[in-house]
Image 1 (cartoon, rainbow, N blue to C red):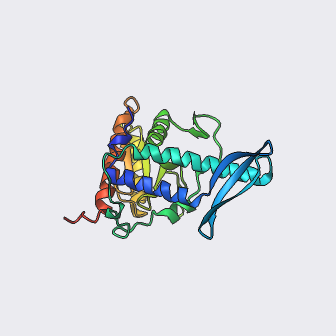
Image 2: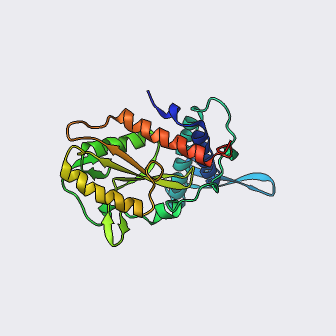
Image 3: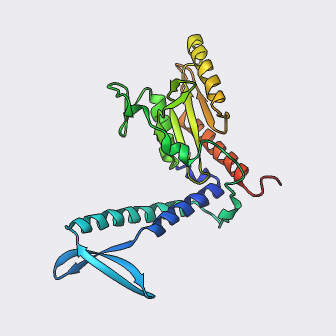
Amino acid sequence: MSRLIELPALFIRARVNIIEEEIEKLPVVKHGKHRDISVLRIYYKKNGKCRHHECPVNSEKGQQLLRLKKRRDALLIRRDQWRSLLTNDIDIHLLDLTKVHTIFDKRFWESVHVRSEFESKSTGYRYKDMIMDSRAEMIVAQTLDSLGMEYKYEPQIIINGEIYYPDFLVYLPEFNRCFFIEFLGKLDKEDYRSRNKFKLMDYLGYGMVINKDLLLIGGTANDMVPADEMTDDIIALLKKYCRMYSVYCEI
């Protein structure tokens, strides 16, 4: 059973609104026929009246319209899927994005490059177009996908001249912020703990706050964290964000 239903209602309502805003920016395009030629019609309003312009599907303009139509159709399906998770109407204005400041916002998200842009891997666990270092990382990615999260694998950050690649950077447009996920899979190994201790200290010096900007998932060589537990942690973080940005959070 999908665990999307467990996401905070405020988050789901915000996701629906974001999708609807993107739909509004896209034109309405429909298939049609004109003299036995398959055409695409783009609809618009002029002088208060609904009008349309058409062009052959196989033309360059037609292919552009077809891409827009596919995008809009996909968004409509996605919107209805998220809407179905709402049991009652939620006022999106209960979220106030000015209440909390973070440096890990949309601008930060857009500025971050990923490790695969600088170096390639030949071995590992393949998931989609990524090659991951461990099966556990692949499960993290699958968990994020199951929750409809947008993420980057191994984003590059530079701290005091040192290059780091946290496992994941997740972007939440609902809150205009990101959070990192670091999977620590060999906490039973002393040398591993020692190496990661200094890395985590640098992360904190960079401005990350644990369980706010940085989600740590720990395990050992023979005891991997199950996907359900990862999902629990991510849902708990989203609930925290809803409290942080809710206009009622001080009551």
